[in-house]
Amino acid sequence: MSAKELIVKFGDGLKVDVEYKGFVVKTDQPAREGGGGTTPSPFDYFLVSLAACAGFYALAFCRERKISVEGLAVTMTTERGEVSKMIDKVTIAVDLPSHFPEKYRVALVKAIDHCTVKAHILRPPQFEIVTRS
Image 1 (cartoon, rainbow, N blue to C red):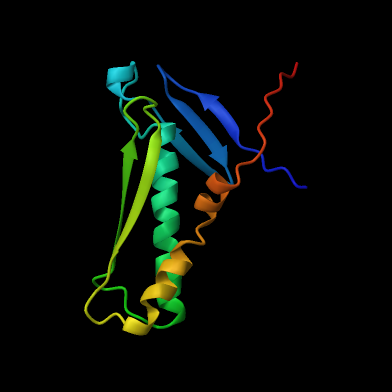
Image 2: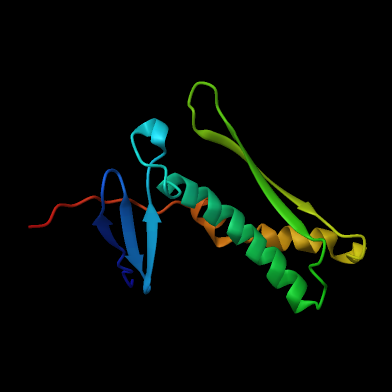
């Protein structure tokens, strides 16, 4: 098993940056939660990664079949439980343009269903938190 290292750096207030693969992902908490609201929160990135993954699979499906993505749209909505406040339902809606071939509708849904972010939610990793000196 190979380990991928993500390095966390602390900024002003509640800002937390993560260095990974040569990129720096900046986060902040919303102002209502004591942050500056200057960037998306870590949870926002979690949701964005799920939507972007679905979009990537839709794009790749169309590109492989030389189907124009003009007019293709992917929208993700979430519903939270009233008691748990956790997300209970994620809906990914795909708006197809009129030129989209009927024969590929079901296959497109199946392709999007292979999103690797979704797969990791359905089969979550084990978590271990350790301290080091």
